[in-house]
Length: 286
Ligand code: NDP
Image 1 (cartoon, rainbow, N blue to C red):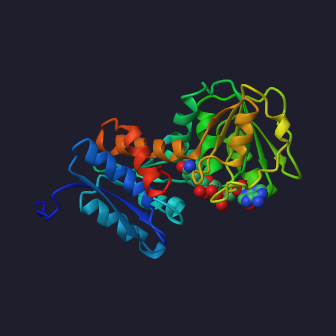
Image 2 (image 1 turned 45 degrees about the horizontal axis):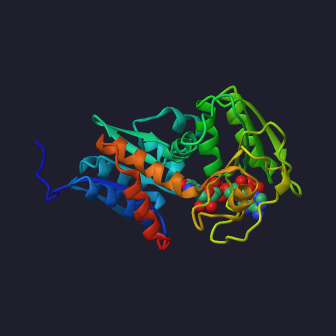
Image 3 (image 1 turned 30 degrees about the horizontal axis):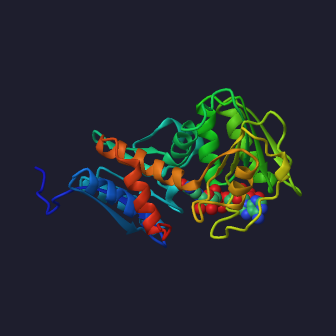
């Protein structure tokens, strides 16, 4: 027999270690309030050694799902009942969704980016240059591959990480992907449709310079940055002044939250409400 609990609300959560993801809490709770949902999103610090117990506990207590951040994105996988397509390819989960009695791991980082990108360009058959090969780059490269891009060039400083990502793209997705080792200023090849900064260059430093030949940015290219604070990075300012369409990292954060809320609740939340909540939480609102 199910034991009655004192929970009045549906629950989703976030399992993290260290600093809590306040912009995420703010935007998800804002969506629940705006749509009159009696749900709560709670942040819990979970030690790596206790992750399995925490997942079992969330299931036992009827949680509808949770987000997980570093260092749990990979180690959570053995504790789940299954994986969505892109999470299985990239081997990392940031969003767990209860489907029936099962906890299924998804990755919404790349999906959030893809949704932003699709608001300005159809990525199918496009040529992409992606700076970086860390967790964020991996998530969005896999999602771009699944969305049918023509070709991805990964530009990365360390050959090991860059090579691992190219291996996933060419091996698991049979994609035309290549690695350029990043030395000095990289010139974007002619014929590139989409340029993405997936590195941490620019985080909390609006003057930080991504080593690239700025004049190789051509009008009509789409230039996107994963950096969300400040959202208007030096790369995006340079791209705008060269006639490119630009996408900031706030769109990616907001869209991964939108997709999480959709997965958990089944409703399509108002993304403008969520973006305002993130901007307030990051101190970006006027
Ligand atoms: P990782 O630490 O996994 O990867 C960092 C990447 O940046 C690596 O490819 C690294 O290259 C590269 N890099 C860092 N510094 C330099 C430098 N000085 N020169 C050249 N390359 C550099 O981080 P994540 O992938 O998890 O995160 C990257 C950024 O994305 C962070 O700023 C994070 O805040 C942001 N992010 C944004 C999200 C959003 O929703 N907008 C979601 C997730 C992340 P190398 O391999 O050579 O070390």
